[in-house]
Image (cartoon, rainbow, N blue to C red):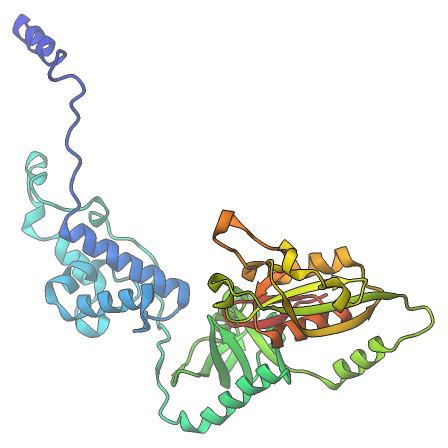
Length: 384
């Protein structure tokens, strides 16, 4: 290095050049397009279906996929990374051939110092080598859905009336005619087709699944099972043995110890923040009579400084107050009342339909473990 070079370096070591950083590379249209297509691919891999026009995040992915499929330049940009065949119907050329053509294009026969002027994202320089599935199950319109509408209505009615219940999914629940809830949607496993053992020695094959929104799918049996384990429930009839168990456990004997009362109250508050809340109830336990317990409600923060109405009460035996309160908070903790003033969070006030509360009390008295799905507004029976 000569003297001139030394002097030049000194200049750039002084202000105003100190601390100057190279400008960050801006996100280009191609970058954003490929990131968007990557999000769509991840959705399909996670759900084993293409996004549907249902609004929200999934609806946005649906619109983006339609846009990529319908615009030639977008499709051509994304095709080399279409490892799931999402663009196959719009292109006769195979993804591997398309990738080969791109990288054999004269645009890449450039000197290294010249290539920088072209805006090519790093992850485009080498295609991802991931095995592409032969088939992706897609939901399509169910042409004979009218034949199934009555069944779906009956299941909804039975769930509401307590004739059926939601329980955690197990593999042996998979049989023709079984109903499930997957991602908040009711689904009927109508038919099993070409069932055999997969590489994990599990029963697998195509199904015909009918969804309550009027669509159907031939999703793989094990893919359905995976979805149910992740975000679903089985729907089962309440058996006669359950009724017998209830009768047996409600029978009072000489060794039973009266504990007190479980009660459900409704507030008579005139505060708009409280009176405007639908399905707001207090669930409590007292060793006194319920009337004695609420006598001073309007002066008690526990009752929101207002009179209350008794909705229901149960006389119970062998129940400890602390244990009951812990169970209630565990079941309905996600729907506990939260007031804006001073971050107030009164205990034992919950926003939940009374019918659900009554069912929960029955389960608690039986000693059955349950959880509450606030989105579905249903109780789920857990394995003891």
